[in-house]
Image (cartoon, rainbow, N blue to C red):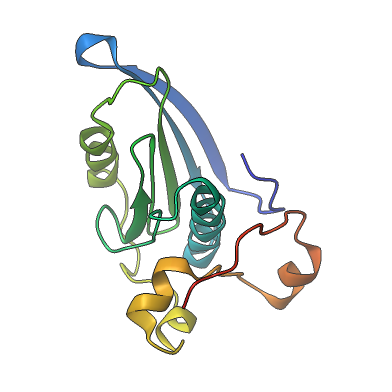
Length: 150
């Protein structure tokens, strides 16, 4: 997990076994604010883009998220969910992620307003790194190794 300085209200991890012994883990984080969950999504997506340039945040599962062949991460309300394949097999991560999303509170059901005010917001959302407050821009303990593409 990225060391972002964000402190969730609740946190949990579970492992699942599917058909043909496909294994996946789910990490779930619930924050006090929806924007904190979105911040974590944008940071995890930036990390994923370092290995896979197609890891773009889109509207799909939950309010917004991204998917690669090895992981799916999304936010819904104040929750951030990260589903990862554990054994390298193409587990049906999509089905597991949708099952988790169905049981979460949708909150406002929208991305942070600041993202909508960026130039070309539909494109910007795919790669923008969102920070919840000005304080966090000064205290972040991670390095962004890729430049956002707008």
